[in-house]
Length: 189
Image (cartoon, rainbow, N blue to C red; front, side, top):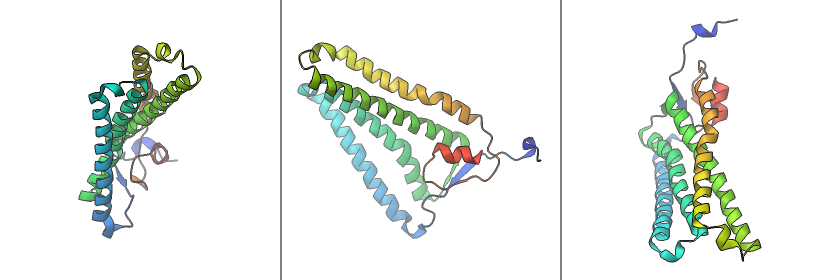
């Protein structure tokens, strides 16, 4: 049985996603860049419209604005590294960089789930309790739901990432994905 303390630890990972399509790297870069720009433009436009127009200052649009802001962050977290990798051909990322990317993408996904739950509760109140809606879903309560969603999304993944950061990676450093998923990282440890 080998002593694990004598093994060389890995300092970076190599993403293998899209490796079988070397001739299409520029085309894939352009496609993903267009998708990224459309997503950023659309979500930014939604937030600007909600902020600029007074009649959109309702709970439903408040939550849609939060969701659009979240989607710009989430898209940037995943696509930015992929675009850089497709453009430069450098598929490596440090262990701490991959854990950081995993933390933000996971936290934003958790926040999205919580925001969607808050939005469904808003719609439930609007449909099932229309006479009480304006008193139950006031500005303060909307802010609490949104802040709780963001806080819960980021705190929920903190413990998982702290445990993940304690793992020692000493085997192969290749991940057959184009972004960092927790399962391949755990398998590599």
